[in-house]
Image 1 (cartoon, rainbow, N blue to C red):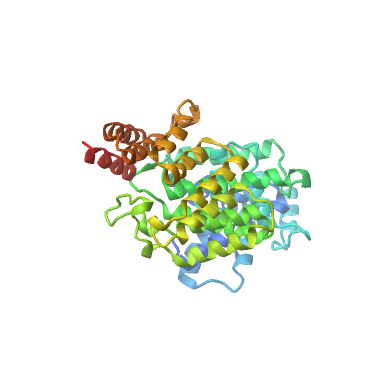
Image 2: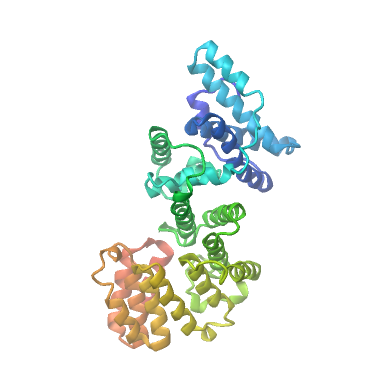
Length: 420
């Protein structure tokens, strides 16, 4: 751990060569350790680099020699040594001696009433940062993913992602963002940013924006883990519970969403015996404890919609009137084109495809829908149900050209071909 250099810091971005148990433990401990260091030093960038270095060292040592009795203290000590090594390279002897003395008790607790993991999440999701930077920094600092893993998840070069993360840390430093919980007046808004970031991570994993695979289980699993962490930190927040429930209820269908060759299987055709009943039960239980006890927000409503789908014995027995009512409520709470798009499907299931197409017509002039294939995909589906096969085929073809996810491309192209 001594003699830390730029080459070694880059080396901290290599994969954690650990077994699954050790890797899961490291991901759990990473934000706790980083919180201890940042609270003490407030140099987020330097402390984060040191923690990454300590994680790689732990992955190598613990896999071979076993997990130490106090793994958190082991990591804090290793990361603190890396911080001291860095300080030694840039500070005068007098100042570095003072720094070493200050680090003699590295595993100090956070002040009473404050939680380092929550403060770290809020810092990484600071609203001054652009959303891509919030995503990257959260996965790096709180999720414990390496830069190369994050780059692969979002299909960008590792150098690009490294610059994005470095720029985000520099922005936090330049703005003087403190490692602390925000004032009470900012709390609700800041927590909504965290929820949005975790939702985006999950969404990217559930249906990848581009690439050869429909879904990325590593991202959905990490999003669920971080949502669990957030729920543990603020158990009384209904929207946090709602987001976790939504993730569990949606991810429960993962095994049924593709065939053995990776082809997409739409919800109506999925084998429900492949759905994860334990996740469904957990999600429903979370939702049951929340609904009616706190103000209802968009994540709770989306979780309720997912629960109606998951609890239906078959597609034909789905309670579409209830789903339509929930989408109507969601449109009042959080209006947007994606909500309207989904409401159109529910309208079609309750009142017929022509009624659903009429709702879709309200989105044709919405600029926010010009960069997604989903409007054309839903239009094609409803046109097919309405018997307008030529128009449906053209809409499927347009949707296939617009998506960069290969399984979705194949599915949409095949639907178009079947209507030829």
